[in-house]
Image (cartoon, rainbow, N blue to C red; front, side):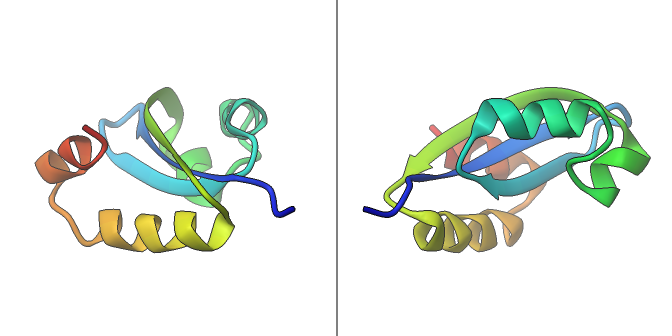
Length: 81
C-alpha cells in the first residue's frame, strides 16, 4: 500500500508562502525549521505551518500542489477550507 501524501502551505519570515508535498508533515516542518527543507524556505526563514491536506498518495498531493501554486495569495488559504 502506498503511503498517504500531504500538501501543505507554510509562511516564511518575510510573509511569503511556500507550498510543498510530504508524507510526514512533522518531520518536514522540522527540516524546514532547521533550514534543510528547501532552498526557498532556507533563504526566507521558516515562520509557521498554515495549512495541510491529506491526499490518498503522493501523486494526488503533487497535483494539489500544482493547483495551489496557480492561485493568488488570498486564494491559497481558501483552497484548504
